[in-house]
Amino acid sequence: MAARAESTVLTGARVVLPTGVVENGRVSVVGGRITEAGPAAASVGDVVADSVGDSVGDVTPGTLDLAGHWVVPGFVDMHNHGGGGASFTSGSVDDVLKGVRTHQEHGTTTLVASTVTGEMDFLAQRAGFLSELVEQGDLAGIHFEGPFISPCRKGAHSEALLRDPEPAEVRKLLDAARGTARMVTLATELPGGIESVRLLVEHGVIAAIGHTDATYEQTVEAIDAGATVATHLFNAMPPLGHRAPGPIAALLEDERITVELINDGTHLHPAALELAFHRAGAGRVAFITDAMDAAGFGDGVYQLGPLEVEVKDGVARLAVGGSIAGSTLTLDTAFRRAATIDRLPVADIVRAISGNPARLLGVYDRVGSLEPGKDADLVILDADFAITGVLRKGEWVVGPQLGR
Image 1 (cartoon, one colour):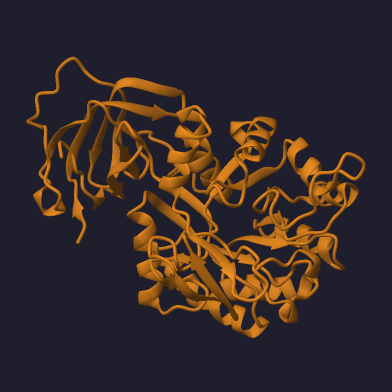
Image 2 (cartoon, one colour):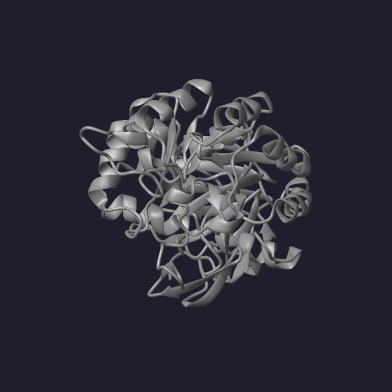
């Protein structure tokens, strides 16, 4: 059970604000909102809790001394298929909520549920089901990944169920989602692709280029039509070539595109991540998980849509063919890798893991940064970037666990 932090002051930590890192910062929370975020005052006047118990039931109003810690905004994952042993594509309400809770415990306070390729009627039915969870605030929207993708770059999608992105078919899913669709991944070079990009733009839905076999020129055409996201850049698309640069070059060079990156050490070599991050810049990167059921759960055999997936040593692959099948990543791991292995500035990581996806999803007025008036969604990290506390809408999902 989560405990609401009716009135809490977090002080002494490195606080990451939109303007940069504040040493010895202070964040005040009243109810479910941030009321203050900035440098710490000379004196606080509240009782300081040097050590707070592991159980959220031990949390009391007052001040938490977070010297040696970081306070960052809650993470925003715009591409996620499940976790905790539960699937967003096929699970029950309890399953979906279990998956959401699993990712919340790893710092993701805003999450979009992603589907995988299936029969159109099933996807429409699933969209209606997930839309109810969006409407009650458990999810931030729906992302349709498939069936409008290239059979040449299908990855862990059933080829038998793929179809061209004809606008009427895309519209069917948008209607079924009842205004909760946030993104659709398309192979825009397929028949109907450009027209469907324009349809999505008209309805305020992100058109994402992914699972594509497009040329450089075809990708530029899709961007000009209104596409704004590259679905897991590098993965499920032609490699960068010096004579045929393909979609990667077009997506990296265009200021209108935000590139998704899966920073799990499996999907991308660190040098590829560095190339993308520094070519696009911190303002055009969104770290995602592309997580499937095994995230936060463990190795084993799972279903991803109609396909069987084997997870071994934390890597998910199709049982037949061996293609990578999503990830077992959680965003706290992506954050820690970015800080300790990729050596990216923490402020830039925060933009990629919170601010940028929040802006894309149209929820930056409520989440994605530590600013007065926004939801009290924040993550406390220790000096090694391990989570010691997660606050969502003013309720402790994890901890805080300090002084242990």
